[in-house]
Image (spheres, rainbow, N blue to C red):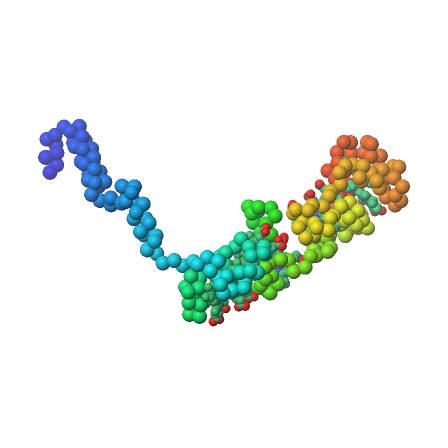
Length: 246
Ligand code: HEC
Ligand code: HEC
Ligand code: HEC
Ligand code: HEC
Ligand code: HEC
Ligand code: HEC
Ligand code: HEC
Ligand code: HEC
């Protein structure tokens, strides 16, 4: 065999090899690849056939309305854009035969934390919690109705949502100042905090109300605010919730 190939010049053998490769590629495309992958029309037809031959598993929320009042409850709540089957799983069989098959009822915390666990890539304003510290051990549904979720009560103290700041201020020289001395807080901020914002002080004269040389406030350390700290905002150097003086 070796001798047989040695009778031809190298270049001829290479051309032969390329030729063989070429022919086998043509044969492969012609006979081995199924025609449905080459012809667009046939391809579309085969795909439609394949998909329609699958059995339908989801019924859609509207079907549930016939038998479950949850439909009308959910329609008006925060979960209105969630399909029933997002939580209860495919329920077509159940809709046709309600007593034989039952959809899953996701009572575990994990079912809710899937969407509500804090994740920085979610849009601001989307309600998120840290499931490790947010009322742990109890299922979410003991406090939230899954079909009409809302926070069960509106917390009145700033501390409920700004615990860290409240704890910091409590041990600072500003301990006697109310949060609302420096922040104007509309009542709605406590209900929809991301839509209705609390104000923050605007400029240096705000702190000057108590700290400038001509301020009537007693018991406050005074500075000459026309020169002290130059042009910078006071809170670029002093953390307002824990103003320290080095
Ligand atoms: C034809 C009426 C009918 C339709 C349509 C229907 N259900 Fe039901 N469903 C029932 C009945 C009846 C039960 C109670 C079965 C039992 O307890 O024996 C039930 C029970 C349930 C339960 C509770 C299961 C359990 O283990 O307690 C869930 C969840 C549920 N349905 C979800 C759905 C969803 C989601 C849909 C829409 C995709 C739907 N159902 C459509 C009649 C229906
Ligand atoms: C956010 C997830 C979620 C969505 C969306 C949802 N459910 Fe539920 N559903 C639950 C959970 C969790 C429970 C269990 C509640 C409990 O045990 O207190 C439940 C319970 C039920 C039950 C059983 C009630 C009972 O007392 O046994 C029915 C019936 C039901 N859901 C129907 C529906 C229908 C119909 C829709 C759509 C209109 C729907 N659900 C949408 C999560 C959801
Ligand atoms: C598939 C994703 C998804 C799942 C699963 C889900 N939610 Fe939600 N949830 C949402 C969306 C979307 C909103 C509406 C957000 C909005 O309006 O900005 C929402 C709103 C809420 C709110 C309202 C918060 C507020 O702004 O006051 C609560 C509470 C809540 N869900 C609790 C639950 C609980 C409890 C469960 C589990 C039974 C659950 N969610 C499962 C997507 C989900
Ligand atoms: C012991 C009752 C309780 C349990 C259990 C509970 N929550 Fe809450 N949840 C609340 C209360 C009360 C609020 C209102 C804010 C506050 O006071 O912390 C709230 C607020 C929320 C909010 C709104 C946060 C926002 O920024 O708008 C979401 C979302 C939420 N809970 C989801 C869940 C999920 C998901 C679970 C389960 C993993 C869960 N909750 C378990 C009581 C509970
Ligand atoms: C229900 C929870 C909640 C309560 C109660 C609450 N806040 Fe807030 N607050 C928030 C959230 C959430 C944000 C963040 C909004 C954002 O990131 O857009 C915020 C933001 C702020 C900001 C920053 C505004 C800005 O423009 O950056 C200030 C200041 C503030 N809150 C002050 C207060 C004060 C003072 C109180 C009490 C009188 C209070 N909040 C009560 C949830 C709350
Ligand atoms: C002495 C005035 C003062 C008091 C009292 C005060 N703040 Fe502030 N707060 C400020 C100033 C000034 C800023 C802006 C800081 C910045 O932009 O760096 C601010 C910013 C904030 C912010 C947004 C930025 C951040 O640090 O997260 C929140 C939230 C906030 N304050 C909540 C509170 C709460 C809650 C209390 C009461 C426990 C409180 N503040 C008390 C002056 C004050
Ligand atoms: C309503 C009056 C009031 C306002 C407004 C106010 N403070 Fe104060 N400030 C005080 C009081 C009272 C003390 C505590 C004096 C003491 O400890 O004896 C204080 C103390 C301080 C101290 C000194 C801390 C120390 O260790 O001596 C600094 C710095 C300070 N504030 C910065 C600010 C800044 C910055 C602002 C503006 C964001 C501000 N303050 C707004 C009343 C105010
Ligand atoms: C560039 C940084 C910077 C800025 C901006 C600044 N401070 Fe100061 N502040 C300091 C430093 C550093 C000290 C401590 C050394 C000193 O007394 O000069 C201090 C001290 C203070 C003291 C304590 C004085 C005492 O006698 O105990 C007060 C009150 C104070 N600042 C208020 C303010 C107010 C109000 C503003 C805004 C008008 C402001 N600071 C802006 C850096 C700054």
